[in-house]
Structures are given as structure tokens and as C-alpha cells.
Image 1 (cartoon, rainbow, N blue to C red):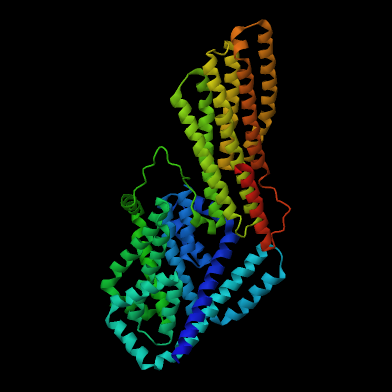
Image 2: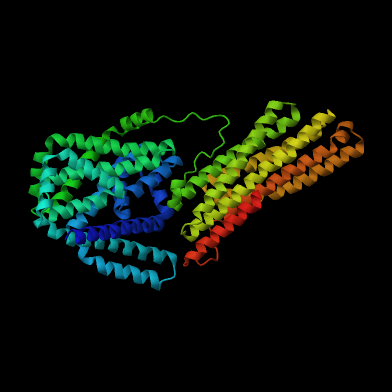
Length: 566
């Protein structure tokens, strides 16, 4: 009997965990960018944020998946830690819906759902439809695994050894909590652990009070997975992980003194033992949300003190927003890559704005400042492109694929602007120092005007990228031809001054013309960025129905990286 029990438990658990992962990943892909927009707009109200947490976790069937999304959005500064906390409280309530579904014996439809999901996957070519099929298949496998474990556990109700073991746990509630915590931590799923606790109750293998202590342990245990995964990552990630533990522990501390009356209350709600466990789980998480929701500002303050922001070094040579954990959720990974690209654009803008001052003053510190900026831009370009290449290994929608390739092209152009400044304009400044001649007054005015126009379009294209404003990007494209005319006009005026024999103009002639040309080259890369923003919403002629095509996208990305760095 014990051999059959362990084999059935192992197989059922495998199906349960695999099904939950499949369901969660497919629903994240389906939700995509719309989820990020909804979270960033609706979480400003803590009550709406909590309800949103419930809905998202019900859809994903995973509070861990919800946490990963929240960490990504918080790291990218799309939502605040305070907003994240309200959604987290809701996600705790959302996990209880799975328990309620188990209690209603939805396991009876497991096999039909497996069949329907498999047919959709094998008989459709569109990736979106395949994701729906994967979600249905994952749902079916989840409850099929539960059914197998339930059938396996039934004979244990008459086994003396198992009965003695469960009686021992009833007398040692803290040991029961520890075992449930450890199990939830090992399987990385509180829902799976609670499903097993419910099966034990349904088969009459444990009392309601023991099941409640096991529930407490399962709720706490799953949080330690998030803490471990957050170590070494961003401060926002660590705060979100510790917030989950804090919420759950507060709930347990409140409930421990009143476990007996709580169990009596839950027993009054239904005579079905499985339903009783599900209801206890629901009431516990609602209580945690009700108690903690009014004090989110205090929680945010405490978490910020426990896990303070890192003090950034002036020469920090690492990306600010990229996080490999977010690659599993492409929409979040792309959001972080966009944020890092904007971070990169800030540095390129700083270099561009400062560059003309180098020709006016012989300032070694300013030169060093620009050179350090350029080195950092190179690092950001390399790391961001490689990060995007990893995302392209995932199964992506057309929109996400286009966004990845577009961002890689934008990163490439920003990196080239930095190269023009560092390898070309800085050399021109050093050459001017050597000849020790100033530009003519009219020549300097022309350079200033050209520089101002270039700075203007860099500022505009950065805003267009940050806000996905295609109209602003088109405005940049309309300005760029004017710069060609301006460059041609200034070049002719410079030649006219040479014909007049102005000494300053003659001595600085090649530097003047090369500098105007460099500004024009920078504007050309700005035009490329604007073009990418405008065309980013257009669909590409790629069949995403096959998994191999996702790797075609990765190969494209690898070629982009090679063209930039090798």
C-alpha cells in the first residue's frame, strides 16, 4: 500500500505543479501589456489595488507569478511600493479561490479540460489560440493531479501508523506549522500544499484544528521562496518579498490565540470537511487584508528602514533596472529594458548637452566626465542588448517581438551617438586645444544653433520613447530634414568667411566643418530612433505559430549584438 501511496503522491504532485506552472505562464502571455497598463493605472487606490490583486491571482492561479510582475513594475518605477502592497494583500485572497474550486470537486472536469486544451494546441497555428489551449490544459492537469492524490490517500484513513502520525501532529501544532511551511517551501506552492491539506480533511485524516495550523504553515512557507529569489536582486524585490512574510506572520500572530473559536466558527459554515478548510483559508487571508490595508504607509516606512536603498557609487558600472528574474515574464522584462534604455538616453543626453562647452573651455575634468559617461553607455548598451536577446528566447507575441527588436535598434543608435561624441567630437576638441585658436564669433553662433537643434530633438525623442508618443516622434522626423538644410547653409557661410580671409575661420576651418558634420550624424541616429518608435506598432511578417520562430527572433538579436560589438 505504501508503495502505491508514494508513487501516486509523486505522480499527482508532478501533474499538479506542472499544470499550475503551465496555466500561470500561458495566462501571463495572454494578459501581456494590458496587464501592465491596468496595474499602473488602477492601483492608485489601495482598495481597487487589493481587488485587482484578487483578480490577477485568480487568473494566474499563482501568488508567486503576481509577485514577480509586481517586483518588475516596482523596479521600473511604474508603480510605487505602497501600490504594490495593496495588490499583494489581494493576491493572498486570490489564492483562496483555488481552494474553493477544489472543495467544489471541480476535479471531475479535469480529463475533459486536458483533452480540450490538447486539441486546441495541436489543431491551431495562431500563437494566441495556442496560449488559450495551454491555459486550459494546465487547468486540467492541475485538477487531474489533485484527483490522483485524492484517490491515493483514501486507503490511508484505515492505516494505524498514519492515524497515529496525524494524532501526534494535533498535539504539536507548531510542529504541524513547521512541516507545512517546509513542504510549501520545497514545492514552491502554497496552493498545492493547501490542496493536499484539503484532501487530508476530505478523507477524514486530520481534524479541522490541525488543518488550520497546517494552513498557517503553508501560507508562511511559500513566502520564503520569494525571499530566497529576491536575495541579490533589487531593493524593491526584497521589500516585496519581506512584505509577504510580514503580512502572513501578523495574521498568524492574531489567529493563534483564537484558533479554537475560529475552528468552531468555520465548522458552522458547512458540514463538508474540505469546504471547512477552504473557508478557513479564505477567512484568514481576508482578515490579514482587513487588518493590514489601513496601515500600508506604515508598512512601507518599516520596509524602507529594514531594507534601505543602496548608496550608488559615482562610478557604478552596472545597469540600474535589468533583472534576470523578469525574463520569465517577457512583458515585465521588456518594460525594464525600456526603462534601462531611457536611463541610457539620459546619459547620452548629458554628453550631448555638455559637448559644446568642451570647445569653449579647456577643462580636463569635463573631458573626463564625458569619457566616463561614454564608457557607462557602452556597458548599458551591451547589457541591455544581451538582456533583450534572452527575452527573445521566450515565446513572444508579435507585439512583444517587435518591441524587443525595436529596443535593440534604439539601444544601438544611442550607443553610436555616444561613440560619435567620444571617438570623434572629443578628438576635435583636443585638436582645437593644440592649435590654440577660437572659432570666429559668427562661426561660434552657428555651432551653438546647430547644437541647440540637436539637443532639442534628442530631448524630444527621449520623451517620445518614454511615453510611446508616436506623434512626437513624427515631429522629430519633420525637424530632421531642416537640420540638413541648416548644415548646408552653415557650411556655405563658413566658406564665404574663408573667402573673406578671416584668420580665426581659416585656422579652425576643418574643426568647424567636422563638428557641424558630427552634429548632423548624431541627428541621423536620432532620426533612426524616431523611425523605430513610429514603426514599432506595425506588425512584422513572421509566423509566430511555431516555437522555432521565437528562436529566429533570437538569432536576429544575436546578429544585432555582433554588428554592434564585434
